[in-house]
Image 1 (cartoon, one colour):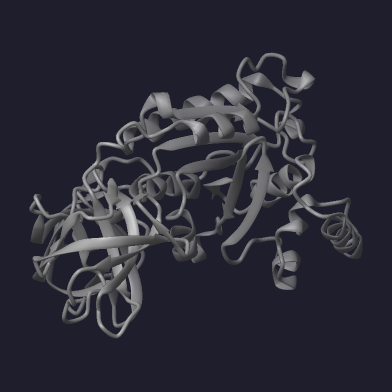
Image 2: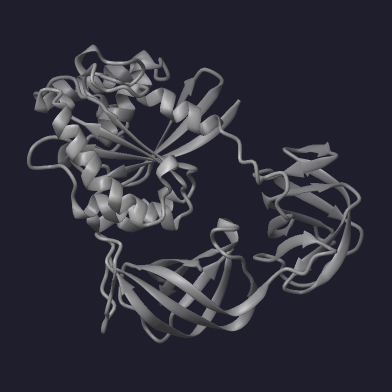
Length: 406
């Protein structure tokens, strides 16, 4: 069964864990024992049943009512399996949010309709980061509609308040969906709610299903790109990696960059079995016709007839979590590459999406910058190939930002 990754975004109090907990219950994707454990925990805290306790596995999370680290929950609906990645919504743990969101194809943003909550700066920052991570489809679930009397005007106010910003940061209007829900009461989760007859769209699960099923028409014609992770034999004739673009067949000649070495693929192994070919997202072992010297980790494999792009000068968009230092490095495709310098061209306000002048780079802001590296790497434009167009910036092992190549 095909598994589709969906990341959950939003402020810490807006009901992400409750939503996924109830979806697991409604689709019968969680055991009775797990439900009973959540009921028991709810009772211990003197509360009504809280579906979110199905996800929060740490006692300190339950006591503080927040998700501390990335939580993965799988749910089956029709012929698809959804892997929901519930990531921290609070500002202090934004690094965890970035690492969790980076695996998803679709983002589900939760925004509370409750008075005093609504659209927050953190809500907008999560949208900004999702776009930087290459997520192209965004479903906005306006939650807690039961606490505002299922008021349609409240829903439309939030839709209007967010839509312009979402489009400003790069999402296309045709890829944005808004749905009013009550995660706690299961309104508009699996079926249309009678309490919101004014809503003419589809329930949340159907929006997720239809977007997950939509095929990427460019996948078949995309150029071959395999990210190499290393060798699994002493002779250095079996390369393991992941196909991130295009298709490879046994017998093809390929070029390994940055070394520029050309080899022929004798045969391919996928999931432990010999295969005639491999496609995007397949983890592969390539059995080649001659040994390759040196460390191959971080190399990129493409068709031998094509010259891959190599550069040490990257115009980039970087989301900043800490101030940069002169000793900054980037981690790109598993490789660590030192920076000569990072020249800031302009700042970007992550709560408005607008450009601004910047003298000193501050955490939780973004910059457009020119990143000059000490050596050339095989790199792509982010919008053309997200796996080869993004990187992490760090200094003395401290995470300081995430970047994409413009």
